[in-house]
Length: 473
Image (tube, rainbow, N blue to C red; front, side, top):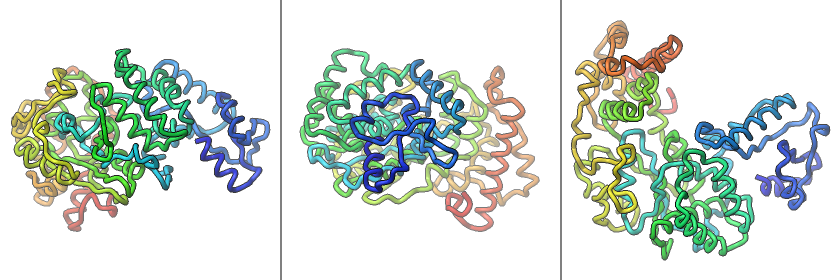
């Protein structure tokens, strides 16, 4: 954020503002920008320090040993100077995305796409289905791999927007190689990396500096070039970005970052029957061997759905929702509707589920095309009829809102509800060996979540209000 800080300091003309380079890594940049600097000895207990931290902290388990060590060094420095650690404030997307205030986002016409679509799709509700259908459309661009590069693209672009054009590519590779960790195999093939570099160098030749939004577009163009797809005219192209493994509320808020009067912006969300979603999630957890009782209860009990469906309004941005079941049952109708909204023509590739033009083999990233089993599978190995009734009850506002089976909590007394949710679940017997999340404190938190959700849905029904409204969130 050096250049923005410098501009603010020059405009306000105060001598009480200074940059403290706590890790002593930016001396050359600070000297070039002629930014005022302060040292530890100059800071008193009457000063306020705004800490701008270069490391990611969202997913430390995915970062390299070097990046992890840097974070530890930084934290030790803070302890040494008796400063509270506010690192999270500057690294978490949902806390800093609204700091972006660019009035002109897509300054260069050559880097201005026709539209951008954010995929805010809840877990096990069509993420891979939508990705693999859209990826073959000749007017849609996307990053297929959902690892470090795709998921951290916002943070990457914001950081690189501070660099001059000639420094952007070296800074990107330093960042990528130092922080991607186990997710850093996207550019493992030297031939693909060379194509990526050539395309980026070509695009970087368009100017001396770039906004973070322009870098977002450039990275998509360079990525597609690696797989033989050239965007001849961006004015006719739509970018689909599904930021995986992030809270969908944060994904929605990326509209604030990307929206502009010159680009059509959309958020695509999906809905799915809750006990179908829960069964699919348990299947996925078993496949990956990462079973957690707390996670399972969270998905069963609808504890976090308000962050998916409590929408924000953004200028120059629209949002629409489709159901997972309709995508499976009526794919041509649904994708024709989506294309109409995006202003592009329907293409037969939308009826194929592919990844880079091929049917993926990995169960973790592939889907079953338009096989209807996921629509009708009741997952009876996990849920009894009684279990499905309880899921429909505790998820009733969502199920009712989107036309799925639901049960009103007003059909039961509070004592009956308590007794109902103290009984065991069939799916618990599927994991007798698992102890993750079964300690007393974890189970207390699970039961507290269930209690709170039951209170909320009862309040909503008695008062006849939307559970996702601002009054009871």
